[in-house]
Structures are given as C-alpha cells and as structure tokens.
Image (cartoon, rainbow, N blue to C red; front, side):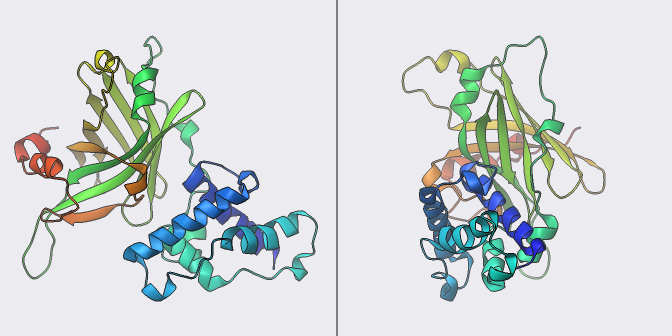
Length: 294
C-alpha cells in the first residue's frame, strides 16, 4: 500500500463517517457505528440501485475489520505500508457508486473533503433567531419542484425533481445538506426570525448559489401547542441558471421519517407512485408552483 493510497482511503472513510453519522474523522467512529454504516450500505444495495449479484459483497464487519483495523489503524500504529495490502479496487468502486459517484477515481476527483460552511453568511445582526423553530425543523426532508418534460422520441411526460435534504444543528448554527443532480451536493445554512425561514446553499462542484425564503404563519405560537408538528414547508427558491438567466420557483419541502429517507435526487413522472397525493395536487397547480416574473 502506498502513501497516496492510504491518504485516499482515509479521505473516503472520513467522508463516509460524516455522510452517515456526522463525524468528521474515521478515528472518532466506534465499532458499533461502523456496523451500522455497513448495514446502511447493504440496504442501499438491496433497494435495486446496483446489480443483484453485488448485494452481498459487504459483510457486517467489512468497514471495521478490513478497512479500519487491517489498514488505517495498522498504518497509524506504525506498521510498514509495504506490509499492508491495498484495498480491493473493485469494492472501492462499488462503495463510491453507492455514494453517488461513477467510480472510486470519480469520488477522489470530485468529492469535497469538507463542506465550507464558514463561507456562508446568513444572519440579521439585530434579529433574534427563532431557535425553537429551527430545533423543530431538524430532520429529513424531500424537496419537490417541477422539471421540464423529457426530450427525445416518444411520449413526453412532465417530470418532478425530488431532492433529499437534512437539517441538523452544529454548535450554535443550523446546517443543511441536500442532494443534487448527478454527483454534486449542496451544503448550506438555515436560520429563522419570527415565522420566516431563510436558507442559503452552495454547490460542491460548480459555482452556483441558491437562496430560499419561506414563512410558517403563526408557527411560533403553534409550537407551544401539544402535538403540533411542521411537516410541510413552501419556499421561494432563487438562483442563476447555467446560461446566467435568473431562475425562481416554488419548492415544497415534505418531512420524511429517517427510516424511509434516501439521500439522493431523482426525476419522477407525475404518474409515479412515489409522489404523495398531497404533493402531487400542489405540483399540478401551475399558477401556484411556477414563478415567471423576476
């Protein structure tokens, strides 16, 4: 095993640690947590995103025994790299594929090692942050917006873009991570003043910033009511398109139980059974959903 291979493996394991359990270093992840991560990988494979013959390639202890103990911990303990074998490149490709990349090399080329949350500023100096509302909003969400019809021969059916977003607290800040098309991710910050919510996001792979503004009317008072829960939010989303035209649209955020959450973006036809009825009804209302005046 070479020094470069060791550094690359550490980068992958740090990425996985943050992606699944919000820890920035593989050294901080326990054996039980690596078992959990292995289980999550196997679940993703068994949901049909990868060929059936590959679904059993990860044992319960694959990450911990084969990558952590035999390689990373051995190297950290001073074992000569020449006595440590390189990880199976085929398995590295499969792991990268599960994470949304074309290959292990694609991951090493394009994955952001650390999201630059510190670059994003979203605060009103004289405002009082509504932390009670932000705490309530932490969790998993699916974000829906209309997409263009399919191009090419055959029947064209309108598509809906569904992205996956997580809101979580880190210290005194509230952060978001959201899936994007192909291999890129969005990362950002969320804040709230009174009943108004603001989100700012950057992309990991290209220069494109997105902004979201929404209002949960009377949410501050309603949060004091027993059993009240915010399960849907509507936002105005703005950004600049790749041809530098302004883009504005409404997005619907729908809360998702963690056990059903898949951190990836998909295009769905309006006929898809994966679209909840209450979301579909709103998406069909063009006047409500699309913004044409900038």
